[in-house]
Length: 102
Image 1 (cartoon, rainbow, N blue to C red):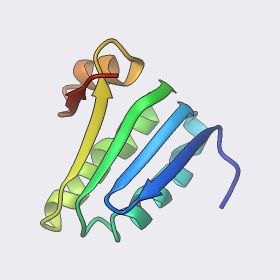
Image 2 (image 1 turned 90 degrees about the vertical axis):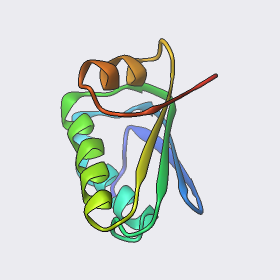
Image 3 (image 1 turned 180 degrees about the vertical axis):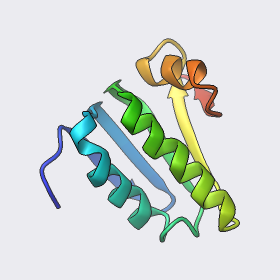
Image 4 (image 1 turned 90 degrees about the horizontal axis):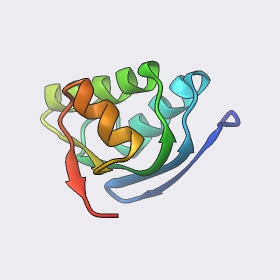
């Protein structure tokens, strides 16, 4: 896999992201989501609590993942903390997410 500006850890059913996710990371992030969700066929929670930068192309990757999963009978759940960059961006873009505490 190519080097990214963010870090990611995976556990069964969960992908935890942290740091700045740059626009150049869109392919790497898409690949991670595809792998973690068995190509959008298994439920996946994407934890954005520690993400500090989220450009529009990455929002597109997240939105696409939720749509692709739904088409396959699965669900991608985005998780964000109130007041964080991801929470504000997802709210403005009207992308559903689960709000959690820090």
